[in-house]
Amino acid sequence: MSEPDVSALKTVAEAMAIIDAASVSPQATVARLSDAGGLILAQDLHADRDFPPFDKSQMDGYAVRSTDVHAGAKLRVVGEVAAGATSDHVVAVGEAVAIMTGAPIPSGADAIVPVEDAIVSGDSIALQKSTSPGKYIAKRGSDCLAGTTVLSAGTRLGPAQTAVAAAVGAMDVRVFKRPKVAVLSTGDEIVPIDQRPGPSQIRNSNSAMLVSLLQRLGCETIDLGHVADDLDLLREALSRGLQNDALFVTGGMSMGKYDYVPGLLRELGVELLITKLRIKPGKPFVFGKRTAKPFTYVFGLPGNPVSAYVCTLRLASRLLARMAGGTLQERWSSARLGSPLPANGPREFYQPARLIDGDAVPMNWKGSADLFTLAQADALLVRAENEPAMPAGSPVRLLEIPR
Image 1 (cartoon, rainbow, N blue to C red):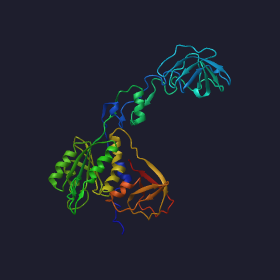
Image 2: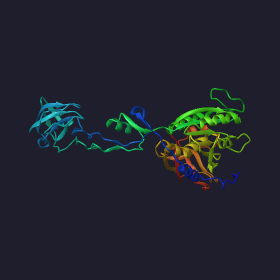
Image 3: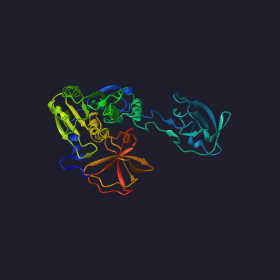
């Protein structure tokens, strides 16, 4: 059966342009480095000294004069320098100093002979082959010089970036706060997850899903739970949600008798910039901004979980990234189509798919309520509006699902 005419609805590209044009003001704060993982730097960080701060051995072995080293040479071991220690000895002709990885090179030496290339006999070593000046030595400042910008503002503090910040002594860092985001589920058919549903009811999986996804997108989340299709209850819950940086509401977005949410949002001062999209799943998508302070962005999501997931990942994530002081970090990939697909309809389609031996295998599409299929998917296979049928082996574009 053909779909109803959707030509008057905004395209996904038009929706992205509207969302990208929305102004944001990321809020900076100072945090302990140990608490700043995943946040975006609001300052540049600079090296406070040269790295390494001295000429450093890259191997366990012996610090030597390279001119003394050749196959069959014997050198007298006159001392040792461990990592964290120094040596006052100046290496002279025919001498070697035992040295550990990371230790400073003693004066007079200009190369390292690895321990496996030396045969120890008492206080002497016999050498197997020649070497060259600078061999296995990291020169002072070869990683970076004092004053170098090692992390720029706008960098996300992942594990490696956190290590860099620690190395330059950044105990406290200026970062952008996580967006504070509220999640609200609506509908008479919804019950809490710890309650046994009646014959016509379902558990509130949407809130749990969105809280998890939004946390992975870098948000501080507040779960407002569920509210029934009651005007007064909805108004009160929406008002509480509008006290945050953003509000995500699932359900009540379409044109049914009890779809109250868009009208209540307008009543509460929210300008609706998008209502309904040419996207599958997720046509009943709403985006708006409360114009009175505190400014709040609202994402009205369909009640079906796959629709809510797709719209949050593809559309809302764009704004959330900027609210956190960063830029969108979608992960796209390409693959060959593992099985043929029929022609697509008039809406841009995000179909769950598995990656098997490098091929994208479309999963059996049971509709936008099928969260069980979504949970098994590796990516969303993206199809353009009115795209023709595609044979197996065709190149396809994939939006990877965050884990």
